[in-house]
Amino acid sequence: MDDYLTHKYEKAWVLQSELLRLMSMSESTLKRYMADWRKSGKPLAEIAGKTMIQHVWEKANQSNLGKVIVATDSEEIQKVIKNIGGTACLTSIEHQSGSDRIYEALEKCDSKNEIEYIVNLQGDLPSIEASALSAVLRLLENKEVHIGTLVVKINEESDLYKSQIVKALCEFQENKKSTKAIDFQRLPKDKSTNNFYHHIGIYSYTRDSLAKFINLDQTQREQDEKLEQLRALENNMHIEAGLIDFLPIGVDTPEDLAAIKDLMRK
Image 1 (cartoon, rainbow, N blue to C red):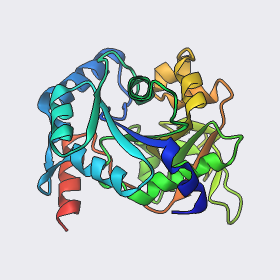
Image 2 (cartoon, rainbow, N blue to C red):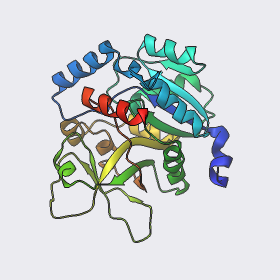
Image 3 (cartoon, helix red, strand yellow):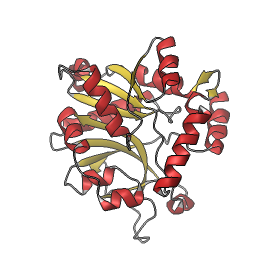
Image 4 (tube, rainbow, N blue to C red):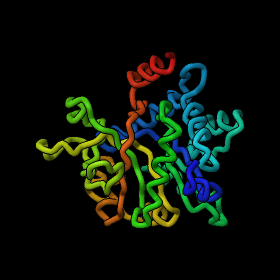
């Protein structure tokens, strides 16, 4: 670990939400999809002999950034995590975003306000690399940053036109690995630019910025596109995007699950 991460170790938590990334759906369809996902037990799907949620939990622990807590509204997931020696916080079923869920877990598990830095890792990223968590936390070295997140270069042009793949609009300076995010879109509004990147659903916050964010009203664009990060941008919060080389497979569909099973068998 570098000096920054070593210094922050005792004051950082990785809060892992088992929420899926929200795809472009109507509110009623989204609620049915989320309910079906939970009922089917897909966060507990077996991948290479372990549940998906356990794979992500292990990657979070490998980062050595601080205590790992799984924030979930599922008693079954809570039991699985406790059985492997982890900590799980049972939260409300009413949350509309992972940020709201982890804030509830933070308030419950750290009532003395000792934790200053939080990494929000979604539980549907079993192929995430532990180094990605360090990378997203490191973005908070810049005191102007409220929220850190990660992006990857888009190599397949067809991905630009898949609404389930969230795009980050960023302008990186030469030899720079981070920059202020300009926008997040599901489908590119300006097809002439080459400045779109895959957005990876992992965030870092200071405690104050997370509290500010979850107390903001949802914006119309956030509701239309089902992208909570737009709420931050439209309220002048600075989201810093860090560029990494590896694109983890998110498990949003049965096809994604089959793909990650094939990958992790190798």
